[in-house]
Image 1: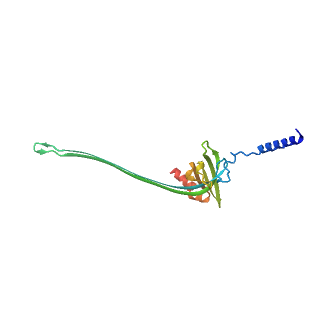
Image 2: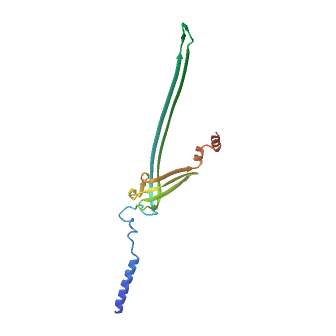
Image 3: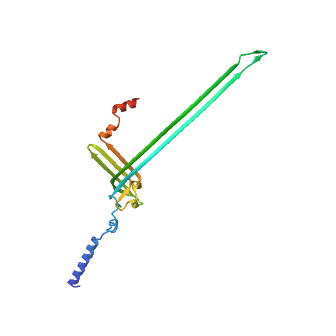
Length: 195
Protein backbone atom coordinates (compact mmCIF):
# COMPACT_ATOMS: atom_id res chain seq x y z
CA UNK A 1 0.00 0.00 0.00
CA UNK A 2 1.53 3.30 -1.03
CA UNK A 3 1.88 6.35 1.16
CA UNK A 4 -1.06 8.15 -0.37
CA UNK A 5 -3.44 5.23 0.29
CA UNK A 6 -2.23 4.91 3.87
CA UNK A 7 -2.74 8.62 4.48
CA UNK A 8 -6.20 8.51 2.95
CA UNK A 9 -7.23 5.55 5.15
CA UNK A 10 -5.85 7.35 8.24
CA UNK A 11 -7.81 10.52 7.45
CA UNK A 12 -11.03 8.56 6.91
CA UNK A 13 -10.51 6.72 10.22
CA UNK A 14 -9.91 9.98 12.09
CA UNK A 15 -13.05 11.52 10.57
CA UNK A 16 -15.19 8.50 11.46
CA UNK A 17 -13.84 8.33 15.02
CA UNK A 18 -14.25 12.07 15.52
CA UNK A 19 -17.81 11.92 14.21
CA UNK A 20 -18.62 9.09 16.64
CA UNK A 21 -17.28 11.11 19.58
CA UNK A 22 -19.51 14.09 18.76
CA UNK A 23 -22.67 12.05 18.15
CA UNK A 24 -25.78 13.27 19.97
CA UNK A 25 -28.05 11.09 22.00
CA UNK A 26 -31.60 11.41 20.65
CA UNK A 27 -33.06 10.74 24.10
CA UNK A 28 -31.18 13.75 25.48
CA UNK A 29 -32.95 16.16 23.13
CA UNK A 30 -36.29 14.37 23.15
CA UNK A 31 -38.09 17.20 24.98
CA UNK A 32 -36.22 20.00 23.19
CA UNK A 33 -37.80 19.96 19.77
CA UNK A 34 -37.67 23.06 17.59
CA UNK A 35 -41.27 22.42 16.56
CA UNK A 36 -42.91 21.76 19.94
CA UNK A 37 -43.50 23.80 23.09
CA UNK A 38 -40.93 23.67 25.87
CA UNK A 39 -42.78 21.77 28.61
CA UNK A 40 -41.34 20.54 31.89
CA UNK A 41 -40.47 16.86 31.61
CA UNK A 42 -37.14 16.38 33.43
CA UNK A 43 -35.81 16.78 36.96
CA UNK A 44 -34.86 20.38 37.52
CA UNK A 45 -37.24 21.84 34.93
CA UNK A 46 -39.44 24.74 36.02
CA UNK A 47 -43.21 24.82 35.69
CA UNK A 48 -45.62 27.67 36.46
CA UNK A 49 -48.40 26.84 38.91
CA UNK A 50 -51.58 28.89 38.54
CA UNK A 51 -53.25 28.79 41.95
CA UNK A 52 -56.97 29.42 41.62
CA UNK A 53 -58.77 27.99 44.63
CA UNK A 54 -62.28 28.76 45.82
CA UNK A 55 -63.89 26.91 48.68
CA UNK A 56 -67.21 27.18 50.41
CA UNK A 57 -68.62 24.99 53.14
CA UNK A 58 -71.62 25.22 55.43
CA UNK A 59 -73.11 22.98 58.05
CA UNK A 60 -76.39 23.38 59.91
CA UNK A 61 -77.50 21.13 62.71
CA UNK A 62 -80.61 21.15 64.92
CA UNK A 63 -81.73 18.71 67.55
CA UNK A 64 -84.54 18.61 70.06
CA UNK A 65 -85.87 16.09 72.52
CA UNK A 66 -88.79 16.10 74.92
CA UNK A 67 -90.01 13.72 77.59
CA UNK A 68 -92.96 13.90 79.94
CA UNK A 69 -94.29 11.51 82.50
CA UNK A 70 -97.20 11.71 84.98
CA UNK A 71 -98.41 9.49 87.79
CA UNK A 72 -101.75 10.08 89.44
CA UNK A 73 -103.43 8.29 92.33
CA UNK A 74 -106.78 9.14 93.82
CA UNK A 75 -108.92 7.39 96.36
CA UNK A 76 -112.16 7.81 98.35
CA UNK A 77 -113.91 5.65 100.88
CA UNK A 78 -117.18 5.44 102.88
CA UNK A 79 -118.09 3.71 106.07
CA UNK A 80 -121.82 3.40 106.13
CA UNK A 81 -123.21 6.83 105.52
CA UNK A 82 -120.16 8.62 106.88
CA UNK A 83 -117.75 9.66 104.20
CA UNK A 84 -114.04 9.38 104.96
CA UNK A 85 -111.62 12.04 103.80
CA UNK A 86 -110.52 11.69 100.22
CA UNK A 87 -106.88 11.21 99.37
CA UNK A 88 -105.12 12.11 96.15
CA UNK A 89 -101.62 12.00 94.85
CA UNK A 90 -100.10 13.46 91.68
CA UNK A 91 -96.52 13.27 90.40
CA UNK A 92 -95.34 14.70 87.11
CA UNK A 93 -91.93 15.14 85.47
CA UNK A 94 -90.87 16.85 82.33
CA UNK A 95 -87.62 17.26 80.40
CA UNK A 96 -87.07 19.32 77.27
CA UNK A 97 -83.88 19.95 75.29
CA UNK A 98 -83.33 22.03 72.17
CA UNK A 99 -80.01 22.68 70.48
CA UNK A 100 -78.85 24.17 67.22
CA UNK A 101 -75.56 25.06 65.59
CA UNK A 102 -74.29 26.37 62.28
CA UNK A 103 -70.90 26.85 60.66
CA UNK A 104 -69.99 28.54 57.40
CA UNK A 105 -66.63 28.99 55.73
CA UNK A 106 -65.57 30.63 52.48
CA UNK A 107 -62.17 31.23 50.94
CA UNK A 108 -60.65 32.40 47.67
CA UNK A 109 -56.99 32.33 46.66
CA UNK A 110 -55.47 33.45 43.37
CA UNK A 111 -51.70 33.45 42.74
CA UNK A 112 -49.01 32.40 40.28
CA UNK A 113 -45.82 30.69 41.42
CA UNK A 114 -42.96 28.88 39.72
CA UNK A 115 -42.13 25.38 40.92
CA UNK A 116 -39.36 22.92 40.17
CA UNK A 117 -39.62 19.25 39.16
CA UNK A 118 -37.99 17.39 42.06
CA UNK A 119 -38.44 13.83 40.84
CA UNK A 120 -40.15 11.76 38.19
CA UNK A 121 -42.27 8.83 39.32
CA UNK A 122 -42.13 5.44 37.53
CA UNK A 123 -45.43 6.17 35.72
CA UNK A 124 -44.06 9.45 34.31
CA UNK A 125 -45.84 11.79 36.71
CA UNK A 126 -43.71 14.55 38.25
CA UNK A 127 -43.33 15.63 41.87
CA UNK A 128 -43.08 19.42 42.00
CA UNK A 129 -42.10 21.77 44.80
CA UNK A 130 -41.92 25.57 44.88
CA UNK A 131 -42.04 28.54 47.21
CA UNK A 132 -42.07 32.31 47.03
CA UNK A 133 -41.27 34.88 49.72
CA UNK A 134 -42.65 38.40 49.34
CA UNK A 135 -41.48 41.07 51.79
CA UNK A 136 -42.99 44.57 51.80
CA UNK A 137 -42.22 47.06 54.59
CA UNK A 138 -41.43 44.35 57.12
CA UNK A 139 -44.49 42.28 56.21
CA UNK A 140 -43.57 38.86 54.87
CA UNK A 141 -45.82 36.54 52.91
CA UNK A 142 -44.72 33.01 52.02
CA UNK A 143 -46.44 30.88 49.39
CA UNK A 144 -45.56 27.18 49.21
CA UNK A 145 -46.88 24.58 46.79
CA UNK A 146 -46.06 20.90 46.29
CA UNK A 147 -47.72 17.86 44.77
CA UNK A 148 -47.85 15.54 41.77
CA UNK A 149 -48.65 16.65 38.23
CA UNK A 150 -49.21 14.64 35.05
CA UNK A 151 -47.27 15.57 31.89
CA UNK A 152 -50.59 15.77 30.02
CA UNK A 153 -51.80 18.49 32.42
CA UNK A 154 -48.89 20.78 31.53
CA UNK A 155 -50.29 23.34 29.09
CA UNK A 156 -48.58 24.77 26.02
CA UNK A 157 -47.24 27.73 28.01
CA UNK A 158 -45.67 25.35 30.60
CA UNK A 159 -48.30 26.11 33.25
CA UNK A 160 -50.51 23.88 35.40
CA UNK A 161 -53.67 24.82 37.30
CA UNK A 162 -53.63 23.99 41.00
CA UNK A 163 -56.80 21.96 40.58
CA UNK A 164 -54.78 19.49 38.46
CA UNK A 165 -52.23 18.81 41.22
CA UNK A 166 -52.82 15.60 43.14
CA UNK A 167 -51.75 15.38 46.80
CA UNK A 168 -51.51 19.17 46.63
CA UNK A 169 -50.23 21.16 49.56
CA UNK A 170 -50.80 24.90 49.18
CA UNK A 171 -49.73 27.08 52.10
CA UNK A 172 -50.09 30.86 52.55
CA UNK A 173 -48.35 32.24 55.61
CA UNK A 174 -47.77 35.80 56.72
CA UNK A 175 -45.79 37.46 59.47
CA UNK A 176 -45.17 41.03 60.53
CA UNK A 177 -46.83 43.89 62.41
CA UNK A 178 -50.27 43.41 60.86
CA UNK A 179 -50.22 39.68 61.63
CA UNK A 180 -49.18 40.36 65.23
CA UNK A 181 -51.87 43.01 65.74
CA UNK A 182 -54.62 40.63 64.60
CA UNK A 183 -53.99 38.16 67.41
CA UNK A 184 -54.54 38.59 71.16
CA UNK A 185 -51.65 39.72 73.35
CA UNK A 186 -49.79 37.43 75.71
CA UNK A 187 -51.64 38.78 78.77
CA UNK A 188 -55.01 38.07 77.14
CA UNK A 189 -53.81 34.58 76.20
CA UNK A 190 -52.78 34.00 79.82
CA UNK A 191 -56.20 35.02 81.16
CA UNK A 192 -57.94 32.82 78.58
CA UNK A 193 -55.75 29.91 79.62
CA UNK A 194 -56.42 30.47 83.33
CA UNK A 195 -60.15 31.11 83.03
